[in-house]
Image (tube, rainbow, N blue to C red; front, top):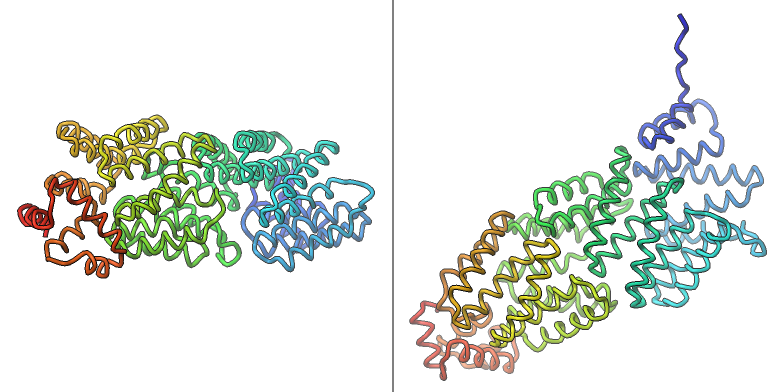
Length: 546
């Protein structure tokens, strides 16, 4: 009977790499390295296996070892490529000094008179630097040059990366259709055979992030599903899987599957690199997403803790935290927070995610002039980007503004547009929230049956999702028809008017301008159909609003 041949640790490690079983590969190749020095290709295999299970220390150690072996073997191109991957990862972790030093090493090994694949790779951080400095034309030129080298030398990895970077730059330049088309091309390239796993993961994540930033919801869903398949095919993969789970959670939340969204967000926290000081980004994003789900479900205490944890790990907790403050009735804190983050955010794409929250908060406190400016900005962005999602957000903002101005009839058309878009896109929660505004408009116009139908449909959705806070708000709307459609801030002003306070005193007490209080009082008179402070006071006492 023949004796079974037991594979060596090195053979097991190589086989595990071929199967993309990264934890097994790391263990076997590490064992092989303890038995005998590794050849350079095996050192690279061990470096990438470490990367994919988030062992940053071993990633750097073995890439540096491969760099030295390539130098010793007289292969400057391969040595330069090792130096490039070390430098790029260090830059991603925020270590600009060390990262720049390794990239400089790579540049020293490249012959400027002989373009190589490494020459193309080294143009990518150049494009990133120009992009960070908002030098978009220079960034695009560097990315295009990298793509040209990739095409000339037939390097698919570099081609996918260059397409990805250029696509994001085009989005920043406002060329939305061209940018998204190039991101599509990069992901198709990355999904082909022979593409390195690290390149595929980077391209998928970049495409999804960019699509989310410009609210290309359908594309984000499509590429999130592709990234999920990529990660599922490599069960031992840690890098990318946490980011993938966050994106999946966001998609599930928008689509109305909140249990799946919660599961993915919790798993993303578990999959985040450890210790978190190595790379806090994935953990911070996962914590923020968990906070968003807790806020939506009405668990405010848990949401507050998670927003705080996300902030500790470097993630701006807005706009979610200011919406939490608004839901808690802490209006001054909500206004201060959204004003602060809007003032600090000037990049157009970054502002897109803040504008709807800013409109909601400012309308809640009656700052209509400020809210109107944000509505105009959001409408301009919707027109520029031609995205259905942005169009729905802008329409909802306009409808809510008109409601606050007392123009219920003018609010109906934009609100109906927003509702139909969210319904068509499969976003039930967002559609249900618009129904609340539609109910307010119907009730203001005397269509009580229409208002009841909208409220009933919204309630059904909130019950299915488990949106506890929205259900509580809905109960308040249903049992308080005598409030005349007043906003929360208008109710505050009415109570103070009923106490006999002057507009000047009310302005000081609520930290508002007298002009804003004057407008609130005028809106109250219109909504309640009264003509004096005495009549408004009588209304408040009659309907027990004081």
